[in-house]
Amino acid sequence: MSGRYLVTGGAGFVGSHLVLALLRAGASVTVLDDLTTGHEAAVPEGARLLRGSVADAGTVERAFADGPYEAVFHFASLTLVGESMREPVRYMAENFAGAATLVQACVTHGVNRVVISSTANLFAEPERMPIDEDEAVIPGSPYGESKAMLERLLYWADRIHGVRGACLRYFNAAGADPEGEAGEDHRPETHLIPIVLDAAAGRRDPLTVFGDDYPTPDGTCIRDYIHVADLAAAHLAVLEPLRSRSVRYNLGTGKGHSVREVIAASEQVTGLKVPYTIGKRREGDPAVLVAASRRITDELGWRPRYADLATIVGHAWAWRQAHPKGYG
Ligand code: UDP
Image (tube, rainbow, N blue to C red; front, side, top):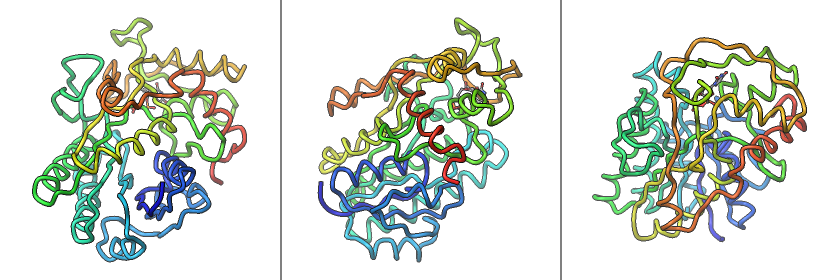
């Protein structure tokens, strides 16, 4: 792979793993990140970091001066469903403003391939499970709505300007770089697997399981955990079709795991008991979310390499053990 790529949000969890994949494939990378949630130390060595907001046109112009870019990957956004339920206007305004500024710069600078992070939160009322790309988009929160707005922005950028867009709807991104060079470090951490592992290690209070009265076999919510390295690989896989057309794919393993199954897998991987209590349901949590990823497999040959839950938890554990304070 040759040429330079722009990655906004490249200091974040999924973004930093994509930067690693790009560098390992031989590409050059510029990261644009304001470091409000990302970590400078998460930007892999070899990438150039530009600090600033993707919603600021002047900053984005400076980032494009580092081009020309083969393609742009857009991760920088607000990402917390719960927070978006409290600050809906901020979520929609900031996420849309960032994408709009970036896509406008792509048009101006003749960059015709854009990949954006989208989400399973587009599907609050799925008719079928697993959820495929034909499912109606009914966002579950202002966060999901902001991603739906980005998908529409890309639709019109393609129709009018010929900018091809890939909308990648991640289900539950998890795990860590299999070679141990990157991992997950959100502050505060809200995601199940890192919370379970830190609770097991005694680095935080016991886990609260958000409800055990769901209509699932063990009463806890079921999610489709997808390895972050598999997500990164999917970003590379869409670059070729983007030369001629826009695409949208749901990215998961096709297999769901309950919260109790995640606890059991973590106990097996770590050899430690996971202390937990059962709490109330968390607002906005659907009982089951599982992706049908057949389309990207059929069209591009992508399939998850690390689909096994114990492998995903194992990589997350290895990174956390090596970095008990995360990125410091
Ligand atoms: N969860 C939980 N306790 C926690 C965090 C998460 O029981 O402290 C559950 C949550 O209700 C959901 C699953 O774990 O069913 C995954 O949650 P996470 O926040 O990791 O991802 P989400 O599905 O919200 O994207």
